[in-house]
Length: 194
Image 1 (cartoon, helix red, strand yellow):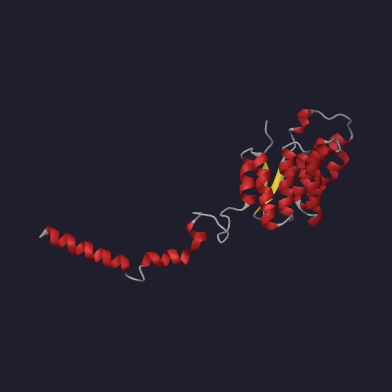
Image 2 (tube, one colour):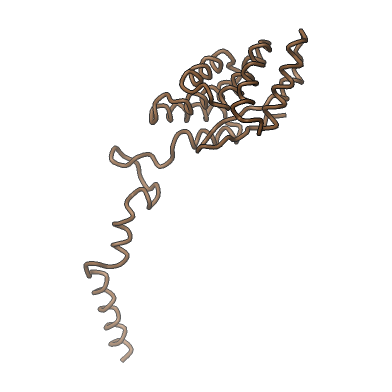
């Protein structure tokens, strides 16, 4: 008797699985590959995670070289827009490539002269090269466009004002400068390593 009941239940379950319009099939079909998560990649399936997002995460983890690679991937995806150029410049700055960072950040500001993070980071790159007067100008622009909301930008500006009158620049003061980046319409600060 038990075998007959189990056989009948197995037959009913098998019949349900073959029935068109199974509710699980509808959910999977309507979700599409993007909503199901990254299971594979190919020419017809876009990359699951944006290069800028991955780059920002790698920057936060201190993996600046890897972040730079991801930012270049982001440039291939989005073009050389202000966010990409500023991110590439920030990564180059963290890698100590001051002249390259300066060029990237200047290119970013050519596209958007009100971009707070690019002004701040260009100020840091210039300060690292001992160009305090120009660094002060960019810190001032960052402070104005940010409307004075960021205490880190204010500290950078005050340090640049102080240094403009001095001739020396010590390594200890370089660690006081803070980098910024923008992502998803908001400003995020990156702390300097100690």
